[in-house]
Amino acid sequence: CLALSLGRMCAAQFLRQHARRAAFGAAAAALSGSALLLSGSGTDGGGKQSFFTSSILGTAASEAPPTRKERILVLGSGWGAVALLKTIDPNLYDVSVVSPRNYFLNTPLLPGVTVGTVEARSLIEPVRRLLPGAPGQAEFFEAAAVSVDTASRTVTCRDVSGITAANPEFTVPYDRLVVAVGAPCNTFGTPGVYEHATFLKEVEDALSIRRKLADLLETASLPGVSDAEARRMLSVLVVGGGPTGVEFAAELHDFLKDDMPRLYPKLGDKLSITVVQSADHILNTYDARISQYAEKKFARDGINVLTNRRVMEVRAGEAAVMDKKTETKQTIHFGVCVWSTGLGTYPFVKSLQAALGQPARRALAVDKCLRVRGVQDGSVYALGDCADIKSKAAAGAELLDHAKELFKQADTDGSGSVDAAELSTIIARLHTTYPQLQALTGGRSSGHGESKLQGIVDKFDHDKSGALSEHEFATALAQADAMLSSHPATAQVANQQGEYLGKQLNAAANAAKKTANANAAAKTAAVFEPEPFKYVHMGSFAALGSEQASLELPGDYVMSGVGTMMLWYGVYFSNQVSWRNKFLVVGDWFKKSVWGRDSSRV
Image (cartoon, rainbow, N blue to C red; front, top):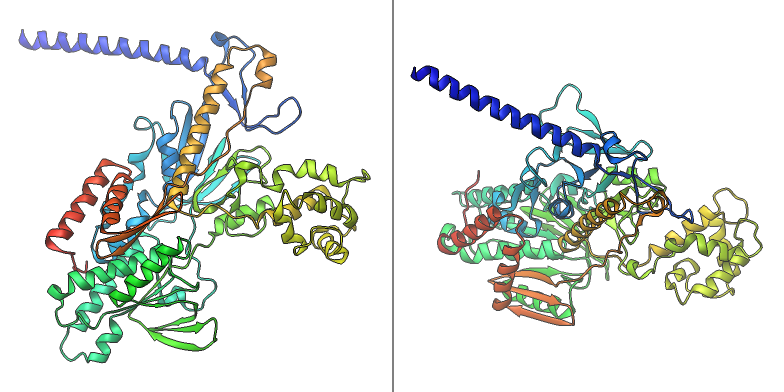
């Protein structure tokens, strides 16, 4: 009887659940039938390319066939991509992410990994935990983007991991593509960098430096190692005096001061740190007061700073360095060489630039709304280190934004082209509004340099017609715009760009929803115009070691010292992308303060 009763109860429970699922499925089908379709591109009444255009089916909502949400494909898993994922509404878009690494990395704290101040696992967060919406609502593919077909709106990807399937390549369709692949370190063509130096850009780089430092320390501690050989082993060369290079040198000095007397008491006076900087000062992008403070502190700490120097070649255990002023050369021996000299360009970005007709520059040219220039339907965006957005783009300072109008003004005879005389006239009229035009004229603002202006025409006259077509005219304006200053390639900028783009995409979808029940004329004219991206600088930190830091704030305010380091701890605690990361990083800081840094080589 008991078994029969339990069987009846289970059967009744199954039937109730089945009925609820059937009712839910019917409701979901009804809802999907009235979904809104966002078109990939459109024009307003004047034929102007719009950012988003809303469109619905001509039938009633109850009779409309099922539709889908727009597909947003994000390439990358850095600051910009993660900020976008945390902002985008997954109920409005189908989101997919493609990245060769399946985690986010908090790069500003990476120098601490090299000496054990923080652990690598504390700085990373799996991308799958950061995907928006419920489990399965967004997708992630661990692969590298290879190429983009803007006509068919597909991205070809390839699995570059250690384990691959029989066919490692696949394609992912999109309606909106966000390129946030970052940028590699720039070697400036210096021979031997890849073979004999180590970058500090990824987790693997920091762990490699940490293992090599531990190996050198243990080897230098062995009996029979001469004093000269130990000093050579423990010579650390840092190429690049930017924030990464300076903070690595500061972390290494703290390890030398705080931990080596206890762990390696016989080697304390043998480890040396040399920073080679091409500019006049380290931290040259910061306020001059911070640069001077950092240089004085490094001098007190015994860190050798060589400015106005260029590394000509890196060989096994040594680097050839030239003084840029006197052109004298010297050889610097090292056990570890850390290369941190700016950003380069990934092959994927170069191929996309070539496909879109963009000049071969370090980053993708984007407009004030982060749309990649050269994509006619405005469906591709770029942000972070791989995007070049001008500082004054929001104020309309770029010539390219007015290229069509300026071409019409320049073509005074209506021939459909601009000759040297017409170019001289338009430049003379615009040079005060757009000072970047002086990059084309060599500083001339009027028609006195006819030969120079003819040279401009000849340079951009690809079809050799003797005058500039509209496309050639725009190419010349693009070169002038390249002279404008850009936003810095920092995590702060990328984070703000990701948040901005996510909000704009959400606003576009919500605006389209509001027009779903409008009449046909209103639907055709319903265009969402985004606000331009405006970067708000919140300040810049530089950790200088010995529990001291410098801070540059807007309004010409600079502060340095131990109190600033306390602010640094607070800011970088709040910048962690998850509570898991917050607890892990604070735990690492606590362990370092109580038990010191971990010198294990694993």
